[in-house]
Amino acid sequence: MDPLTQILMSFGIAAPAGFNAYLALLLVGLGDRFNWISLQSPYDVLQSTPVLVGLGVLLSVEVVADKIPALDSLNDIVGTLVRPASGAFLFAAGNTVLTDSSPVLSFILGGVSAGTLHAFKAGTRPIWTATTGGLANPVVSVFEDLFVGTVVILGMLVPVVAVLVLLTVLAFAVLMVLRLRRGYSRRAHARR
Image (cartoon, rainbow, N blue to C red):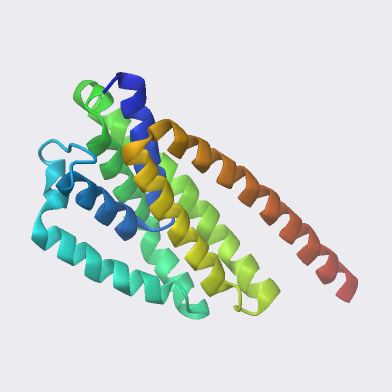
């Protein structure tokens, strides 16, 4: 695999960890097991049965916690550490180009890309909760999970498409958040 494709793949599998770290890690572990991706040591630990089972359990807890309005905020607090760290690990796991020459840069790029998505998620969830009374939280969470699954799988199989989907969905999400914030500000201003 050429260096640019490896770097695109790394972004495609690492950035989505900012929404759901355990799903991204589990899918990459399964991808290694099914030869969709080739992880070198020590990153190949993701495909081991005990790690896959552990990630499955953690994913189950996160999927439930992220659908409940009060619990999702607590989940996001825990995610503040877990999601960027998972993104850093996944970015480094996805390529040998940067990781071999500059492992620190690899970890930084992965942590920043996942951390950015995590900050977006943690920053917008209160808006969804406030504007819908928490009713939209499960729907938003399901969309996030589908997004993570889609982008990570595309990242392993068609990295260029994964990055394009990632950028497109992020642009759409930013526009929606700006629209929600404007509407929320108008309603708050009108109440005064």
